[in-house]
Image 1 (cartoon, rainbow, N blue to C red):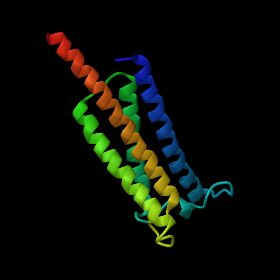
Image 2 (cartoon, rainbow, N blue to C red):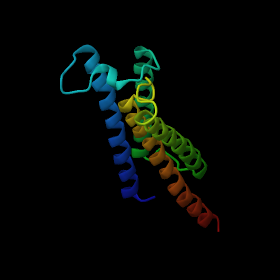
Image 3 (tube, rainbow, N blue to C red):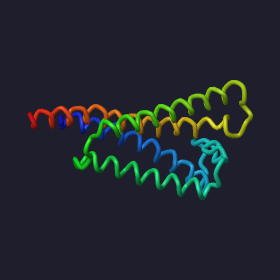
Image 4 (cartoon, rainbow, N blue to C red):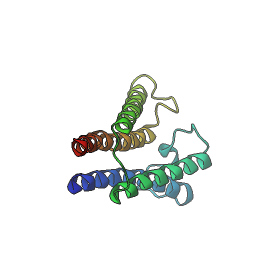
Length: 154
């Protein structure tokens, strides 16, 4: 597998994870030491989950994403076409639902607590992009691995 391509995927996934970490950090900052240059604490969440549960789930997401990146960087990820397809289906469904959520919040339900939560929706799109990029890695390089293994057996 091309080392440069693996590095590019690692860098893109790292950038997406850093964006998500910024989101988590910004809301924590607004919860404990509010600053004027960031959106208010309430702007960062829809209120669908209690804040403590949101932070715990965000920490889990950060750990999982960091592990994905680390394994990719250390060449410990075996690309799989099947995994790529599953991740792409999940990623596109997630991305599509968040686009619909954003569209509804901007048009027909601007006062609804969940639909009008624009910042959380944007960061859900960041996470969906993470899944899509990781899925693309699996799909493309899973095919390369499969072709190489077929060539080795011939």
